Image 1 (spheres, rainbow, N blue to C red):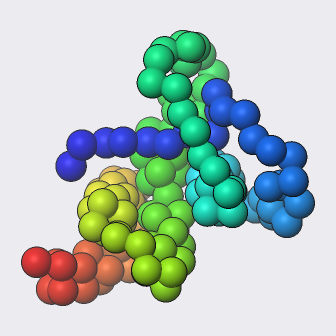
Image 2 (spheres, rainbow, N blue to C red):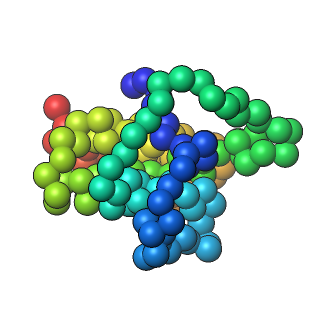
Length: 134
């Protein structure tokens, strides 16, 4: 799967879109759990197809500190998005692929770190996806 990420930085938002936003305080990368909700609440989303800024990864950034990519791209965020997008009738083909990819990353990293319960949970969810997503 080609990795496509929509990041919260480098964007302008209407302040009123944040009135009901609740960011998790106990989860890393909390913006991944909330930014998509803002997009769905917006009346209009525009973009400029031109590079206007450059993202520099510092030595102390979360993406370099964490060897566990499942922390950077939590499956939980994709699963929540998939739930809502399915209910409201969106085409969820790409999101289903993202859920599978993120679960595989979580599965692999849990095995490497020795988190047996997290690994078994991810394996179970992957088996369900493999059975029904053909």
